[in-house]
Image 1 (cartoon, rainbow, N blue to C red):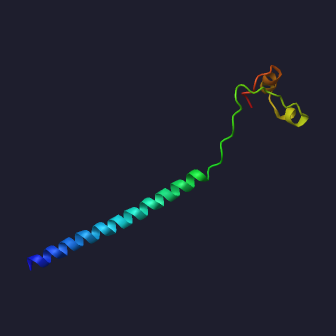
Image 2: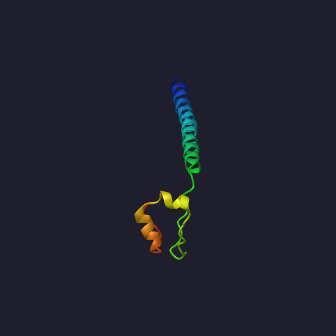
Image 3: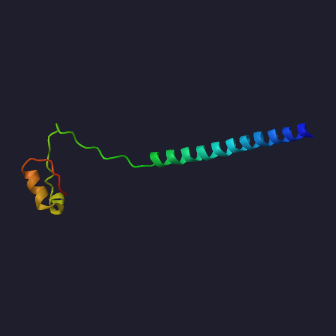
Length: 84
């Protein structure tokens, strides 16, 4: 009877380890998939012009009507605008 109990206990432990491993792998793969989906769905970041490129002001009437006086002053001074 002692040998049967040891065998049943060993089988129970091995089975629970196997099931736990399968469940753990499934949870891990779901988290990797969701993390991958979250990072690839992000919109690309806007490119920032380098400091060496020359600034050219947009002087169209439609653009000029929407810009602030501070931005216009920066454009007129030949500075890349830092204000909206």
